[in-house]
Amino acid sequence: MIKQALEYLVGLGKTEIKEIDGFKYATNKCTKIADPVVNESFQLTTLTGVIDYVNNQIDGHIVGEGLTIHIKSPSIVRVYSRLNKDRNREQLVEAKAILPHVEFNDFMDTESFNIMLQSCFEPNLDMQTMLKIIGNIKEEMVQNTGDDGVTQTVTARTGIARVADVQLPNPVELAPFRTFPELQQPYSKFVFRMKTGPAAALFEAGGTGWRVNAMEGIKEYLSEALEGQDVKIIL
View 1 (cartoon, rainbow, N blue to C red):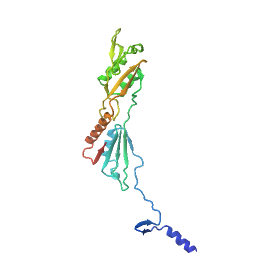
View 2: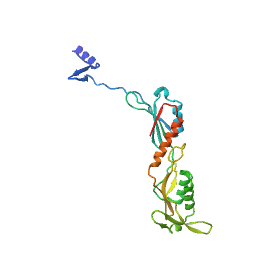
View 3: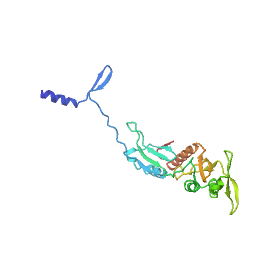
View 4: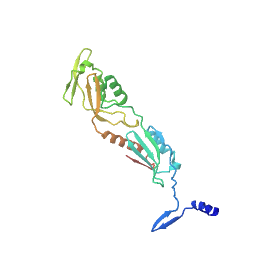
């Protein structure tokens, strides 16, 4: 009895492959051991960091060549290894741009609007015009408004003691900080509106074309910097 029990226990550790009606079966459950993968990827904030990672082959002795750079969005870039035997990729790097919060589609007081323009946008002529207008608006002046739905006119100070009707520029072309600092920030169109308070707002009007332009700019920048490397870049 003891001998039979021992033989049974020994048999539990043996796995046999049997074929029944053309199908193969294992006598015991088999668990596949997956290849080890990176536990935590590098967290970067610039495209320069991505370039340094690839050029210096920081993990080259492990992952080899054939890296893929995926431009996920205008502010996120990831580096992956090639497929392993389990048909999985390792995420080696994630670069996420540090960007300011820009408030769109909502009115704010002119002081906050002024600060947002100067701290979150690249300077240009339209931005300077807007700063000049909101800097010379008083609450009672915004009430004197002509508005046909497209153009808006407000009364603003134009001199020490003189006021004049000023037409708000619309649409305006601005470049908020929305992608990596190494690149030219993409321009897009916005509707500039004001109301009593006084308050001002920017409403996005240019669609999502800026996203495509920014991502193509990232690809061009990385392609030039990594020329000669065994790296594929995809959007």
